[in-house]
Length: 407
Ligand SMILES: [Zn+2]
Ligand SMILES: [Zn+2]
Image 1: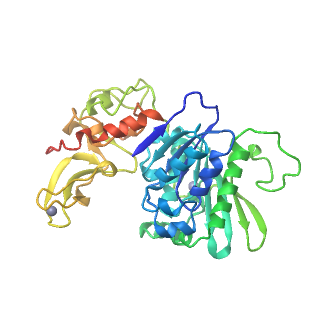
Image 2: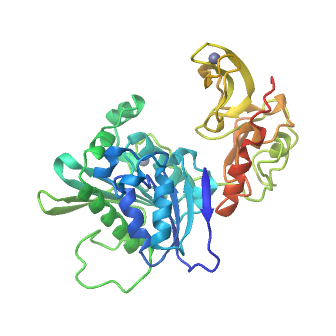
């Protein structure tokens, strides 16, 4: 569900990935970014569909209810600025191909769940892309914008989290999500304005800095490249507060930016055996597939069996990434089949099916495949990614869905 429009000869500028593009903050962000000189490309990411209650808090019209958020917003952005290069992904940030994330110059997130914010934090760090995270707290009339720049010793979004945040994620309940739906539109719009203003100040070279610019981050950001910063504007108290954020040594995240091999010519059409043997010289592993070689995708699992919740029928399937499984109909009752949890695995054993293509495992252009052997891991970015080709990669993706076999 990715569509891209690219206009030849578009002006040079930055490309911004907006996570939560259709939401209480994102829907306002897009209109502002589309009108910001120096922004030449947008990547819209949002898995949701508009519902009636969104009308009160989000920048949409009544006719948009029932439609995919990214579709509605992509149309709107095109009307405002038809010259923008635009990619729309109707999915969660965790499922966006890494190559597409890395093609962004900055990520702007207006997300209403902690789990999604954790995912966008990790995607930003893996790709080494700066992150601006915006939020609102309606009960206290607060608007918050935080800036994180992945670097040695720098703070990340999760550095400020503790046990309670982890618990919230684990029970898949989002305080912030509940708050966001009750949030007045002006708070989302205020957060959007602050976030886009921060983006323009830090990432777009426009005019010379003006005198008396006392708001925003205070000192020069460039002097503190490893520091995160949080800006909170209190509408009730008519005050702003700027806080420097520091790395938490006990943070649960490893703060690693991936070192991705690009020399490889791997595509989704490559076989599993080719994936292992094609690693460039200097990669930690490589050679003919043998005992103990496995493939994986960070944070994702392979499904090996599906079951029907309605009639309990189950069958084995050729291993495939869970988030790319697609719909599978039950042969007995026609219901939709679901993965069997205990049959999932994070590692695909190369030796079991060396001739299978990466595409048949659910991999797409722009994904990063992880190749493991003898306790070492190499990561390779699959080609035919980034921008236009992603559409083709996704369109082709269903090719091998029906080719289940018992492996
Ligand atoms: Zn951290
Ligand atoms: Zn069934």
